[in-house]
Length: 321
Ligand SMILES: NC(=O)c1ccc[n+]([C@@H]2O[C@H](COP(=O)([O-])OP(=O)(O)OC[C@H]3O[C@@H](n4cnc5c(N)ncnc54)[C@H](OP(=O)(O)O)[C@@H]3O)[C@@H](O)[C@H]2O)c1
Image (cartoon, rainbow, N blue to C red):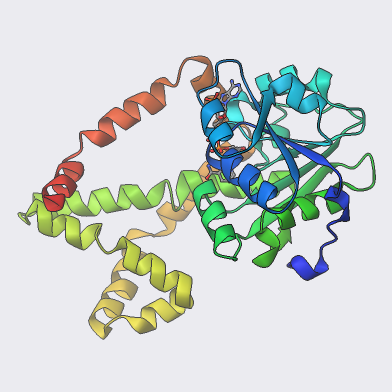
């Protein structure tokens, strides 16, 4: 797979063009600021009464209503929560210029048919692989964040070039932009969130903490052992890979890891991971996401409440002093 970097990207598709960033949250703010610093004409589109208006203005970014922003732009980037993008698209679509480009930073709305874009629009994805805060700080450090790009509709014949130029203006071309598809990016991203880094890792940390505490270990020691070392292993894996991480730790730790790890992550775990991926691919997860939004997020509110009340959280507070 070809990784595309700055030197292989033509800036021309964005020259003289205006980008409307719809939403000024995690990605919206970072992308608007990076584009602005890259010399791109940016306007942020916000809903009436938006609490983000003052923040965007304080950042020196032009603002407008959703409709005005879309109407004034060549590229309309939808950067609000995935489950509300369809409702936002219904507002902006009548105002999008004939032949404009519609951009996403995640494949879900297109992959699961939440949005069926007007046929005259180019439709592309530029998905930075990390949060907006890091996208912004890397840009300011002269570095960049790896991103995936894809094209779902190429009316103009320029959609791929626009996606790459957009990624370059975000600083992603400094790190590398990789080709993907809306389906691949979406499914792999949801799978990681459901079953790997964001889904399984916190659960295994809590289970480890609970096991030690139930066996008589103090909350503080259990926390330091099971959770406090997470950053160390993340940094080692990032710097040296999994094999290099194993070689960097003591023989005792390495033997424990190679004997104990596969006892925990066995074929049963792999089978359940496969089942999670099937739930994602057949649309069950995205239906649940829509239902959550429609009923004011009952699952998310209950889960947040439960997480705040866990013993492991009290241990963290004790350690913080
Ligand atoms: N967060 C990440 O780390 C990350 C990483 C890569 C890709 N992505 C993708 O980037 C996109 C944006 O995600 P995000 O995390 O940046 O979203 P976010 O921070 O939750 O977006 C918040 C923004 O969306 C606006 N918004 C929310 N509901 C709205 C509505 N009904 N009408 C109009 N505006 C509305 C908010 O408006 P107000 O200011 O008016 O409240 C706010 O400006 C998603 O497709 C996501 O999958 C996110």
